[in-house]
Image (cartoon, rainbow, N blue to C red; front, side, top):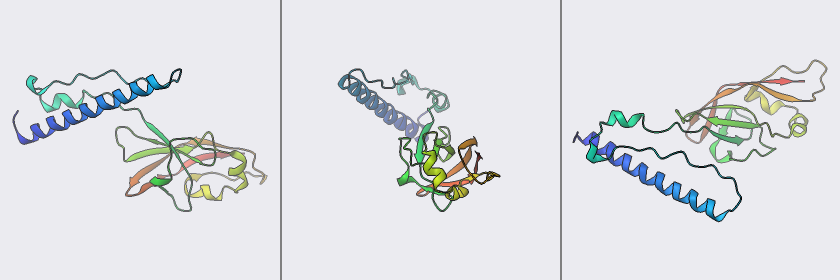
Length: 173
């Protein structure tokens, strides 16, 4: 129990608990300052055994609650790559992509069409920019009235952003 690896894990655990406590305090302060605002309540605190209880490191692995998936929004670009600096937390209508990061593997994400995207703008641009991110069949009549997501695609994190691994699927009518 006193191996260097155990002590290292124990110190990391203490650091994470301190950070969690600080974030919970910040959330409580924000809730107190903004009356009537609906903020997410923090998950219940997870009791992790202290060093005195000598819990094996294996017991600590399952103690953390599942993290919620993080949904973010970004633009389509000329290449099948989204730069991290261009991704935001708000579903702005000019951003065509909605990315959902896998909480168990933060280097992977799924993506689909942003439900808040400006359809007129998307259609007006001719959909050509979407080709690097989405598979779709052009409408037979040539006139496009709507674009809808059918199947999500997959992304892989790289140095400065996200690379398309599998394109998403759209229905165009």
